[in-house]
Amino acid sequence: MVTESHRKWKLASLASLVLAASVLAMIHQLYANSFECVVGNKVTANLGDGVRLQACSSEKATGTFVRTGPLHLIKNGILILKLTTDQEGRLQGEYTAWDDQGIITEIGHYRDGLKEGEWRVTDKLGNSRLLVFAAGVDVTTESTGQ
Image (cartoon, rainbow, N blue to C red; front, side):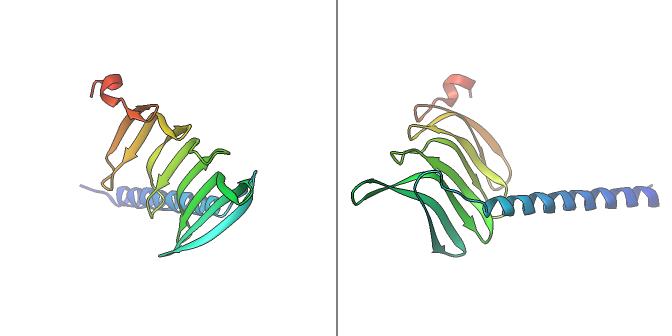
């Protein structure tokens, strides 16, 4: 038998979870609004369907531009992609993709434009897989026995 105090406790727990999720979403939105270029000039473009691109562009040679530094894609105020490129325009460092609700769907690292190390990929049902890359090659079965 469920008591009244047990129902209140469950309701309070649910309210706490909703509040925590709301706070995390607000922090995620604030982060989406912070963007700075260390090298080059900030470029912003509306890509349609509520998607906005923020990137940095610098002139590598006269008339030749390259995307350098951070790149963010923001959809309806929610950060959905964050990556970084080096001075040559190659992916470098942390790569994170989120779904429209702000839940991470893919996270890993790039080295010299190639996936490197552990990558966590999560599908729409919340199922996660750990993949391992070496110089852009999936070596998951070799390193984990899967």
